[in-house]
Image 1 (tube, rainbow, N blue to C red):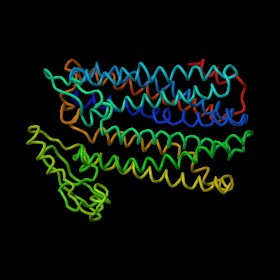
Image 2: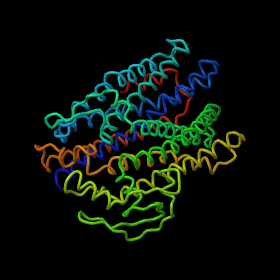
Image 3: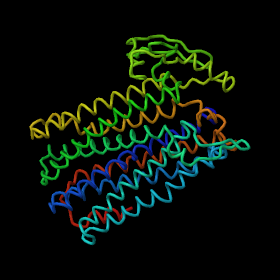
Length: 459
């Protein structure tokens, strides 16, 4: 494989590893904060045990997530120096802000939360977890602000071949972030909710000693899951409509729409044959006018196809192949959407069972919820792949191509060695993380008073 392919593969693998931990870190602090707020208001010791149990799992996930995230920033200077040279004046602003404010806020108050039991008042201790939730989600916001510039550049000018920021307000109010961030935040809530329900289901089936804590946890998870799924679907629809305006090639690719249509049909199943020079449909089963409705909220309106957009981009940017991997975009979109609607169905069933107080009378559903913990991770990973791969061949949309962003000094041998090393090390970290989560999740809430602190000290 060539240098660009290896560099992309390495960054993609390390990012997917890291992104496994991010959604849970966004959503779980919110649920823990809600639980501890209930404890602070009521004094009910069940909620105290719940907060300590779920907070302990949050600590494990946070620790491994930090380790995997640090490597990504080093890659910008090592493998992608031309990107850093072109984008550093802009990309560095949100990254530095994230590190100096949001990350320190999150990590500092997580430490206060860990060691503050029995030292702070109930209300003040609950406030520290709200600050952890604020810090983790502000951290995600700043990262997505940086990514949104790559998706839709705004507030910049080109000086001596480098992008320079001239409007900070435009950077943080990028139209792309308006739909992207709520979608990611809601996905984090869904991930945390199913994490909570799946582990609670295990303990309800096992008839663990602290049944009350896991019944209440299941109830919190079910309510949050329904809210999160509704937001994911609603915001995801708005995000797709925005993509139709900002990145029409991505929309055409995720729908395998080779030729422009008005009204545009929605693909039930499509297979296209793609090469550097041409693209053609092999199989296409489509529903008339539905894509126009999803794009414009009416059953009419042109959606441009891959061939027309390719011709436009050649005239605008010069000769090249501007078509992303169509089948990858097509199937990752459907995996993401399919997983999302399945999660919504499971969340609705869970809420109905909670409302009727029949959760433990349906053991089959509880068994389904345990492996369903992984379903949000499938949707999150598919969504990330679609977001990044659907933008190719651009690393910064319309400004810099991926092949022009690679460091000239790196060689295929260097990248192959580091790729194998990262894959093995990250694989080990993933195994360790899953082991620790399973180990402490199975132990339940009945524990020594200071066990959470001892867990933190291990890191």
